[in-house]
Length: 204
Image (cartoon, rainbow, N blue to C red; front, side):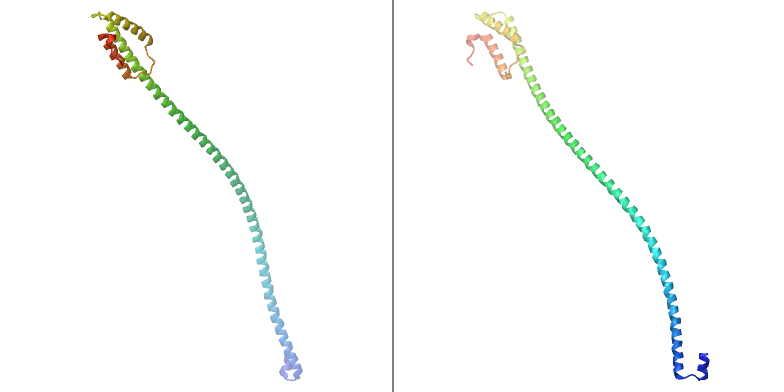
């Protein structure tokens, strides 16, 4: 009806202004309603997104809790493994130290035994040399005793040789530290004594 009155031109200016104001308010109300609908749609969309984020948050919290538990178990396992490794390393170090000490002691014993064996072999060789020289000396004396006396004074020498022979028979093998040079010198002296007599033996 207002529009009809506007067409007919029978409305007063104030009324026309009021009608214009009413039209503006209606347009503003319509626009506000549209904006309110858009805001309502946006709010609902945001609410749905918030619900989705809350669900994702709960899921992430569950995953985080599981990861933290797995990390705690792994750290405990690492601590146990580290302690066991350290214990084994200490035991291995002690074993290696003991083995090294035992090896060193064995080497020292081996060196000592080798030195003693060399000393015994040297003593044995020395004794064999002296024994061979003594036996050679005995054989020489026995040979000389079996020879008939040919010069005056030889029986006395033979008696002396017999005494020496008895003495050497009681000493074989000889356990002395005489050198081969000393025994050779003694052998030469017996040869000289038998040939020329004890009175002709040069003074040593």
